[in-house]
Image (cartoon, rainbow, N blue to C red; front, side, top):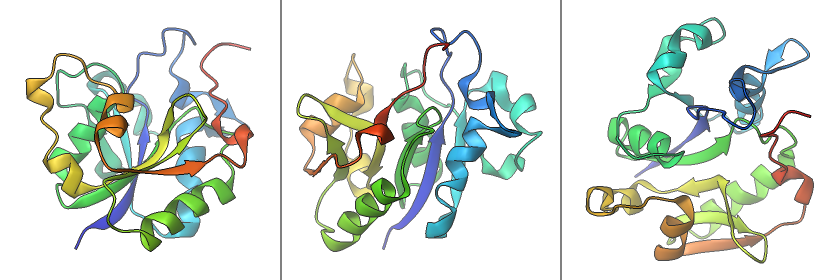
Length: 184
């Protein structure tokens, strides 16, 4: 039986922001730690997905055992999920972006409850009438085992969620999905 773990994606290049988003402070806490804390009420083991250039700075806040370094040539945030799956092939992951700092507890609770209540889906994600919200979603180990990323030239969470058997959740708290990916 698969277990559910958290995965905070921080491995991007933050080109629009101009600085590493995961390390931006809100109070005294970096965004990636703030996002990891949002999973604490659910008692999940939580991993932090980073690229190899970020390890030294991130270690100031978390134990090295918590980090998953990008392992694939896949561009974009899907690299973090595939790298986590490679290291933990029996684990289902709730994936959160490090810049969804307005994510509401009820949004996470609803996602996890539907995952528990309807176990026969590949993925669980919110949909905003136009596209999936893939960076607050659950991806199952059984579905990721069958994902043929080597055979594809273009990789995206949208394609993954469209191709799989995805449980669609309606967004009740739109503020949860405000990405902070540009300087204010």
